[in-house]
Image 1 (cartoon, rainbow, N blue to C red):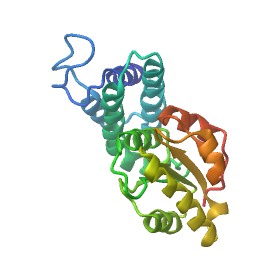
Image 2: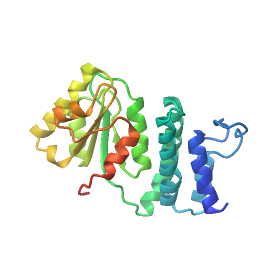
Image 3: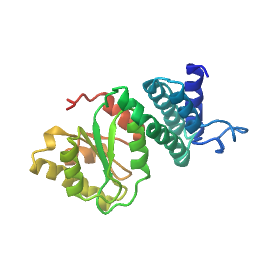
Image 4: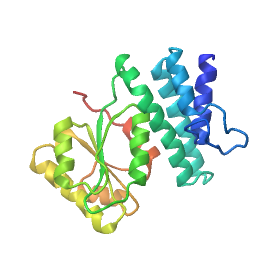
Length: 230
């Protein structure tokens, strides 16, 4: 298959939320047609540049998904389906990206703070970051302050993403930032916060570097930040 046609087909299927051939899409008649998994494998087999697949197929298509979400054409489950496509594609492509010497844009530790089990928004952000070329260390949900700070130190992370969906747990975000200061790590890492109860005002209050209302805004904010990569 022609490289450009393949890339367009991968992008189309990401937007359709089709991970595998048996998956249905938003459009009718797609069941049984090659989806993201099959197409990415074909691209790898044919020697298509993995970086081209990431930038031209995955990143670009998720921008379209983001626009659809903003216009309320897509709901959260639709966006999750597309994000899952990107996650599967990145898992397949990662060894080839490393082999090709494609450097990550930075290391990003992310987690939902202690006491909070909500992780849908965090999961979308995590997958989007991978698709945008960041090395993501996803700590999961209900992660203690010590574990989050420990991960920043262990991985020499350039970024830390904190998520919370409850007003009672979002206070932990401030604790994490204080702990980073206490251990002399605060100046090394850019701290992002997000989740329903958070706001720019709250980010300012606790000294976070950025508040992002969703995954797409996180990617846009990252484009404005330049950090030294070790």
